[in-house]
Image (cartoon, rainbow, N blue to C red; front, side, top):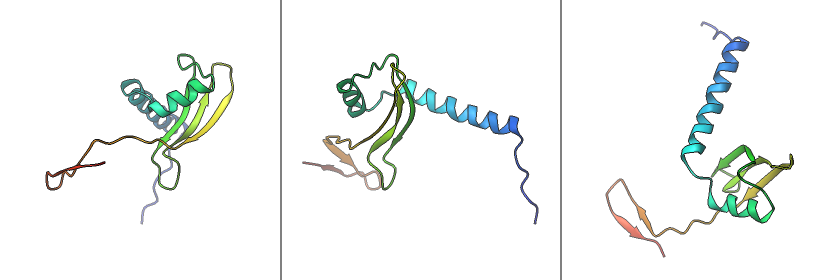
Length: 102
C-alpha cells in the first residue's frame, strides 16, 4: 500500500490561503446574521472596522452562532448566540409539498 505524500510548507500555505479567501469571498457576498450584528452593536462593536476571525453556524452540539471577533479597539471577543429565525414556510423538496409553520 502506498503512503500518501505529505504536503510541503508552500503547498500547505497555498491551501490555507485558498480556504481563507474562499471564506472571505462568501461573507463579502452574504450578510452577517442579524443576531450577530445586533449583539455586536449592543456591545459597542463598530462593524465597519471589526474583523470576524471565526464564525461557525449551526455546528452540531453547539449554539447556532459561535466564533471570535477582533473589535475595532483590538479586543478579541468570543461569542455564542442562539439565533431564532422566524420561518413562514418550509419547503419539502422531495415531494414538492409546502407546509405552513406557525
